[in-house]
Length: 335
Image (cartoon, rainbow, N blue to C red; front, top):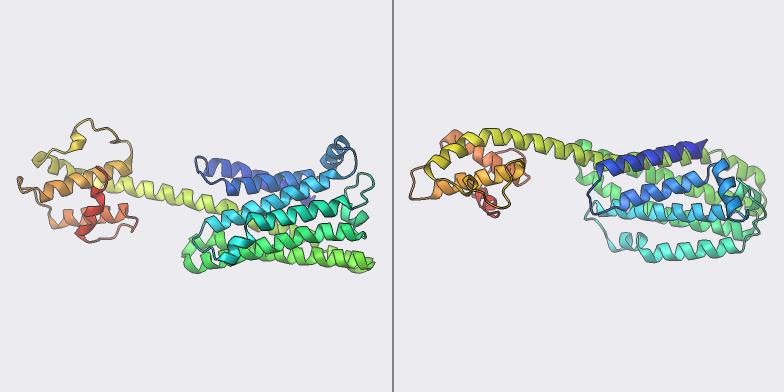
């Protein structure tokens, strides 16, 4: 049941990312959600048995699903790291391809030495007493712990630098990483107990597995989905603010064009009146040009100066506060 819930949650995340992140060049988060969703889906008992029969009935699906999960964790770590400039060497190494390649090779080699018997949906419970199976499981979760530790460090940095609700994705990722580390510790302890023949300890530790597993992916999914959702909300808010500012600057721009007709009065390539940012940028350029042109007698009133300066601050990403008039130089960068 846990696998079904996590799989459904991840496919929902994939769908939301396809909507919220369409057109973005970096697809790390999407690849992470997709590969982890495939891994979780392959662990659903009915589907596992069906696919494993197609592959010869020797539990090869276990390897495929676990490798997909490791790739998903790899992409997840890289996606979180790319969201911040905080990438010290140790974090880059932990989230790098070399560590992933070593972990994948060790996992495949360990799996090859397991006496896997016939198809089973309780692979580690049935075969975990074998040293190769214990090594197989522990390799995966040691790698997961390395990536999650790096993610926790990055998320902690994001929380310190963030403000208000913008910190929520990082907080969710930090909680998910902490829960994932606890899950890795439990699984490794279960592997050691099983290898030592202490079945009662293994089963006792196993009681924590499902709650930790579900809560780990719940918080990781929330963190992954909330990042593009927050960016989408900020973009919508900025677009609304831009349209509002355009409505305030338009009368000033129209008055400026009575004194000094600007390029936007012509059919200029690249100028799109339908794009609020471009329109605002062009209006501010032409207002400033009219204000500094000695051939015309156009002057801004105090109230108009406040509006123009606030619009320039908005374009520079400094909010709608009043800035210095020198910020108008930035608006002249686009012809």
